[in-house]
Image 1 (cartoon, one colour):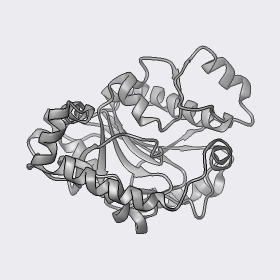
Image 2: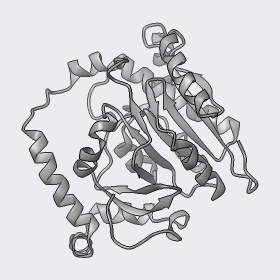
Image 3: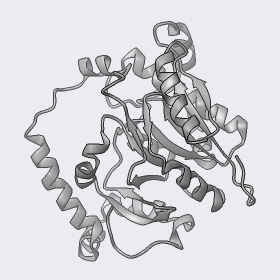
Length: 290
């Protein structure tokens, strides 16, 4: 798609060829929203072992832990899509996974980004994995973002830190794709903290989120593998996350809190500097969190 200013975008859905039910579900949503889109066939780890070995045997492994083969295949699927986006020569792309639940506000966001020209961010995360729309407001307290401005009806900003929040829905710009393709690495597909560090990727987060994962209907292809590699979560951590969230709201959402962070030379200050680009400056409105 292209508007008068020449800003163009495409919508891609990462999906395994044999997941017809998922493909039908995501297709119905996007067609109902009158969005032009196309599938990007994912790599199936069960059938593509040799491909993964050949493609990533010489990659620098920066993963935070040992990876399951399905996780390697997921990373490779998104990496191959970045090459496709680059070849298609679009200014930005919305990347979805086939278990996404899409809010109809996504159309307004895409139009607003397109109307403003080539984005001056590298990635904008519009959906988190394993988060339902019902629990979103509470999660926004757990993980606040320092608001830099608005794009359409969506507030955008930088979080206290980037984390493995999934790849169910995100927007990547042409400069972002070029950065992601500039070095051959291996990690989790959603290792946003590593992308920020290795590629200096300017990553923004949306509030509210516009994409959620339909994890109750479609079990993640990665989930069983990840359970075997991850430590079990403890319920009492929810209380700790809530307290931590309120502290972060104070630190990044008030002038006093930001002054304290600046005094400590916190790395969060550098993240604000990268995120507060010219694309957002015209709409930045003081100190706030979203």
